[in-house]
Amino acid sequence: MLAAWYERNGPAGEVLTLGELPLPEPGPGEVRVKLAWSGVNPSDVKSRARRPLIAPRIVPHSDGSGVIDAVGAGVPPSRLGERVWTWNAQWQRPMGTAAQAVVLPAAQAVALPGQVSLEVGACLGIPGLTAVQAVRLAMPLEGQTVLVTGAGNAVGHLVVQLARRRGARVIGTAGSAARRQLALTCGAEEVLDYRDPDLAARVRELTGGRGVDCVIDMDFASTSAFLPLGVLRAHGRVVCYGSNVAGELPVDFRTLLFQSLCLQFFVVYELTQADRTACVAELVAWLEEDRPVFSPGKQFSLHAIADAHACVEEGRSVGTVLISV
Image 1 (cartoon, rainbow, N blue to C red):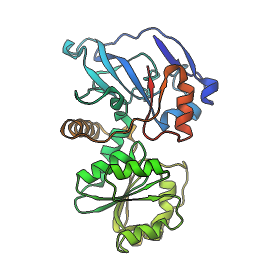
Image 2: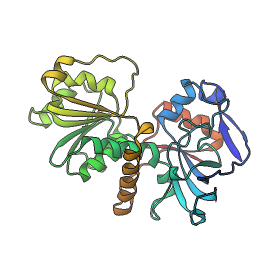
Image 3: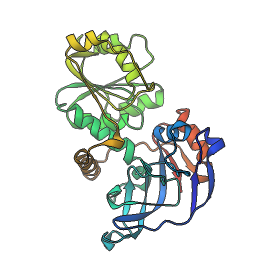
Image 4: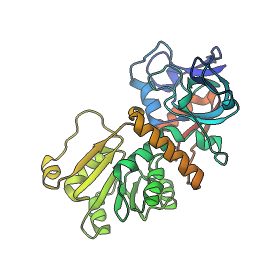
């Protein structure tokens, strides 16, 4: 099968290789997915660039979509031909979705509702499950005002819709006209430029000086600096799933203490089994019950995987970058 891989960290154009690998066979409890699309997320390009390799060869990407074409022992044959989306395909495993096929535990290939395209299916794993878990942790949201940072990003535009579905008023931030428009289309009442030096004042103005009830955040490095400026009301909460700066970050303890603020962090790769099950079920139900707005981003062929990684690194796509495999 045709696949892309890397054997060392480095720039995409230098370390990504395209070639033939043996077609994998599913073992007990596993399925093989003949892939149509591979989703490229920021964590995928960060892994390729600098995270230590867990095997001599890494086929990247955790998200994908396709059709089950082989099943291992213990998996019902009725799953053959099922359209599915994948999660955590390459998490702590060397073989991801940047290939024509992937083998993985049966639970990590989830049936895709009939009206949902395979392109959207490849956007569900990391973005979809992150959005669902963030909103679950932020609840209750009925009648509350939520600030969604990166509201026009791959995760953020889903958070906006899910928060609105739970009865929240949403204020968003975005960094481009296209992302701002996507967030507004998804139900944000107002979308602010995250680079605006008066951002905190604008949030206070939009909330009558009170601050929002909750921040659902994709960049704690930036958001932590706004907390002392009154963007979040007393007894409010921050639910955070990322930061553009890793390592130590300054946090104003006095603000946290005297405002009784709650900070909640999570990473979608390491959800508990109970949370994972609940998130998958809620995401599938949402897809079956509504027609949510998904924004698949720029599309590339597997031969252009280095260009796809560069597109993600440079932020040139609105929505999840997809690779046709």
